Image (cartoon, rainbow, N blue to C red):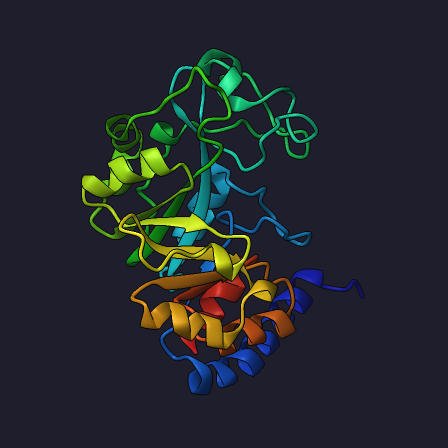
Length: 268
């Protein structure tokens, strides 16, 4: 008799969610669970590559999924493309950075692992969205190419199908302070990344919250941030122990690497 690895994996997720979920209720019942890079940036057992339209359709089809974090970058033609890494090399059939490449060049690329094409954000079909979801759009590497200076209006235009969707609540992650300020002035919630808790500016009029690695911040420091009127989301939660630790600190949300795991934890 063959071994059903899919059932074993799903059973493992159920057990993980049960153990962690019980603790979640007593530690932080208000902490949300989102997926990292749509279907996981570090997810060896996953069926989808991170930040792909196939993965987005899969994740959005789960009514119980509370939300996703996704990564986008501007091309030389000022279009947003879904992709995480700075360099195209090693993961796709292309090379260089996205901000160096035209839309025509980008449209001909494929992922080496699956032969899937890369996706321009305006081409995404959101008809498969089930349930209400939070979407954090991480606008990465703004300024990596000096000739690309995206405006807030252009960013709005590129994200319009997400912004106009009645079931999606969109927040932007923008480390570039100039673009972040422009988007804030348009009324959007803006977040940033922080390497250490010391990078958090509680007096910031631009940023509402920060993403930090779980291991870099304590529960007491998160409480201090929250008491200052700001929020924290934790990532790099690759194991049941790390997820439990992150939940116990009581952040706004945590990022996990598997969609089913996020749904199961959210249901507890």
